[in-house]
Length: 398
Image (tube, rainbow, N blue to C red; front, side, top):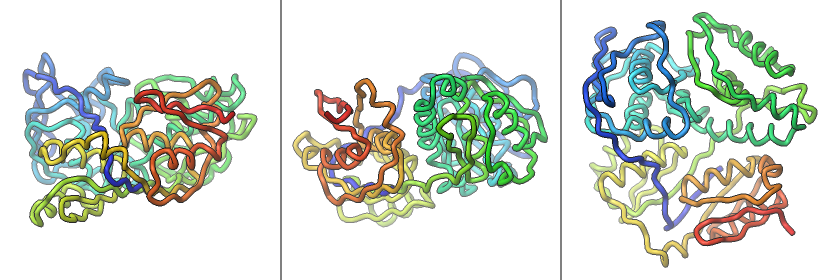
């Protein structure tokens, strides 16, 4: 899915900075990590060092990601896994590292007064990885394969809700999960299958592997299955009766092209490109075009705001925004979530709409206004839209 918007407005997800006291310090393999923490000092630890903290979820999880750290420093050659472990324990956010990312990949970072989210993204980018933010878990994996994992997880949750109620309840069950060192992913899938009373078809596609210990916060069954399968480039599709679950390839990543009102010199473009090594950045006069993942757009938006290089457009100019978007076989809910996050749109849903949000749609529109874009998204699922003040209400077509 590729989205290009001209003009318009992108909403940031920055939270209110926290004032922190105290300093936590931990060292592994020449790594030094200094992080201001709230109210008291905390000593971080690597895997297996004592009981895990009480993981943040929901609004508290987002607040931590958007809060600012005073100082964070890792010396050259610090293993990625140890850097992530120290950050996870100090901030009480669960982080899962994809099996395809080398845990011993050496990183080096020194930052001051930045958001926790930015620390994460700068850390993992050095190992050709990107974070995906599920509710309560940061998943770090290959950029194009897993940075859209939150959208995939959301689509699976919506699809499960269309199954018979008893099945939907089992596959939506929320619980914490923990496994020990040398856990086998096939065994983890077997555990999930027993819990939900289902059978995984295609589990032979999961090769033998051994994983390090991990503690996860309370998550829906669908999210837990999504996390186990992501490292193999897989997700799942439920049969209509909900008794069998087929393993299928992850959908293609959505790359979005969007232009921003900003003026950058050639040296500034080079500096920005170094922070987004896998995205495409093109400065065109008083505008900058970035093509990348949704997460990269969110980071770029925050960067522009921090430089005060972007002003919100007036309501008049916003009304002239046009969009180019190509979607191939994506759930309606995933498309709407992308629009909501990138354009700052608030959606509301009439009764009965949720049953149709998992419908997969395909379309290709060029430089159309927002109402036409919404028509292309919703009409194939038998849905319509209307504006109520600042909210767009999605309803079933009459």
